[in-house]
Amino acid sequence: MKKHKVVATMKDGTVKKGKTDNFAPHRPVFHMEFDDGTKEDVEIESLKALFFVKDFQGKKDYKERYRTVPRWSGTKLRVEFADGESIIGYALEYNAVTSGFFLTPADIKGNNERVYVVASSTKNVIYL
Image (cartoon, rainbow, N blue to C red; front, side):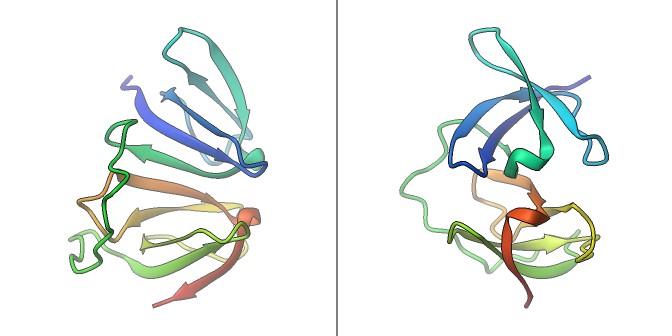
């Protein structure tokens, strides 16, 4: 099974970078493997969001652009997290009563391929 590069942003503000091959939103825990070979069980409810990324370095000076509409789009949303961060993207299956949802970032040239947003870490989810 393919291991995905992920950045786990936790509700407590910590950030973990590693790989996973068993993330499933319906399960309470998934495994992350780090570059040093160590592994850790991560509780999904402890996450703010799980970012599936192209690479771990990212592009710190990159300015997001929201002009491109992905062909798989879905419903366009702005997610405002409780910590003040926000992201704009498209969700195929957003439902306000679920524990979380996948979001495809509106800027497909950015480093994030998709994001799993944990609903309890959001302040607002706004339809655009």
